[in-house]
Image (cartoon, rainbow, N blue to C red; front, side):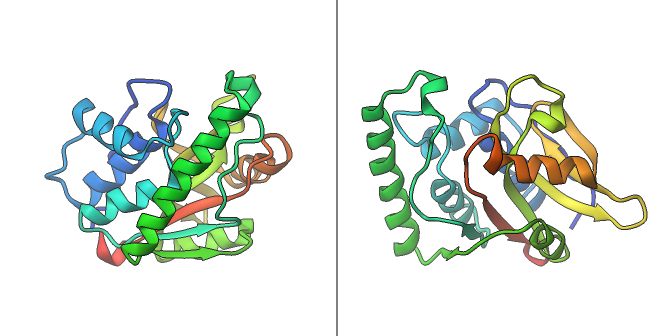
Length: 208
């Protein structure tokens, strides 16, 4: 396995999760090219319709079809999008997205994807990085110095004890080194400012 991960820069505002997964897939299988075609293929097969966001269960299914062994960890299995009004979605849209998410969940369970429902702490991020690459839902605002809080799936793949920095792939910025307090803010403010629960997919490093 290569230590350095090659980023893929997203070509739209709504394909962050798809672009993050594409970087992981390419890292594991270089024959999976970092192309817009693959970015959109992942997105169209993982979108939680009628929203444009990707389902964590559909992302895991896509990775499994590519030969990886993903493990999904969620604090709750049910679909959540409490700040949907800021994105101009209706309550009916969110109800339909919840139905779409349930379909992905059922398929993931049918395909024997390991799905665990439990609390996730920042210490868990440290522990999991010893063996896994993480596709982790974060509030990207502290990482991008943006004005708006945004919930995105980003790749976290390494931690340096000596430097106190995490290595991430943000499809908007590329490969970035993030100080521990900044990542902790991005992790913890997901709940306090975005009102979203923590979710992540683990990809064992020894299988990549």
